[in-house]
Image (cartoon, rainbow over all chains, first blue to last red):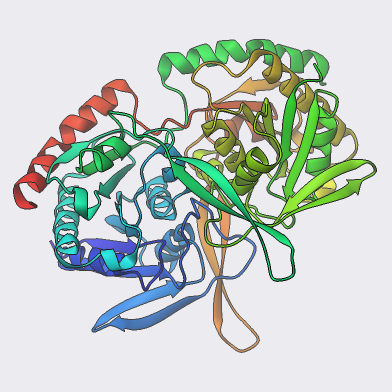
Length: 269
Length: 269
């Protein structure tokens, strides 16, 4: 068992209690490497840093645990870890994020899932963990213990069995503490979670600024959002990064594009 | 024709010649709104800015063209534009990016495709355009003219016919100028384009820093990378943002996860 190499990362930064919970969940499953952003990098998606240097610092942050921090994004962390720490991770776990990562809209902008996605692309099995809370302080007590226990079971299962065929990432969301029902469900992602809106305000010099925020959309039955918030279930969502429409849809799309292909061919030499 | 509302954006920033080419390509297809990052935001993926204020400035940047700039990401731009400029865009075009956006790995980290993806998620038809060059200066002369002409044909076609069913984004890549063969192909994305590597160097104070870079992987036949670089074709890639594995694969994945569901149910209350 102790030969497994496990990368633990997140996007909320090294001081998030979610990182500690995830470390505790997997600490005795193998050799664990914790690498996290030095400051929060929420909503950084799969963004990587190509145009500036990255730092990698080594700390003893918790009692006896060695932690690496970086100024890079969660995606950068995967590549830094694979190049500078160990090239043969058996598992990458990311989180536990403060805030759910449900719906395609949120998943694709999520740094938590972003790190898992980068790991998956280079062949490392990966799981993203998120909890539907607003504040770090909520990740405490009984709720944190249940999350740690479930995360451990999931990590252990994936280490032993691998992810099902065709699945790149297992995206795990924990329900809000006051809605926790004890059930566990597998559900596909909704498309949208928020209507994105903008508030306008004025700085002390009278110049206008904008701030983005999301207005929740009513959850649709059969989606991860519904399973998490309406049914209060621990929600497991198998994700594929294959961006190609499925078989027959792709075929029809190619046929549909033929008239465009012909037009360009005829008019651009 | 002139009733169409078109959003033009990019991730290389307002000073990129690619933005100007794309504006010129669509300028007489409708009412065109140019909104771009004030500085380059390459590789920002679908990242959005939730934790700081955004600015939106209005300039007359080119002769007579009104341009908005922002400190936000390409994804932010889509939401700013939809909330503050016009809520009913018929088309969002992003690019022309300096550098190709081929392979799932690069596509998911791309700010150019990121903007197109955010637009697609909220129901705006979108096309991402990229050119396989290393430097802005290469987007000039004959090459730029051909790109402008082809981009115009593509935008016009999508405005008239829409994207094929099941397609969220049309991802367009133009081949390197010295490989341009005149052919046009539809191809799905490769999985990987680069082996991500890290160089190590030392700053003037002797502190170590890291810099990420990609080592190209040999292109596989039948992929966007092969079509673009080996065949020199204008490469059209229909993308789906549906992150769920297709039909039977998803079914088997759900069955495969049942033992995990049962384990968590039994052991976490």
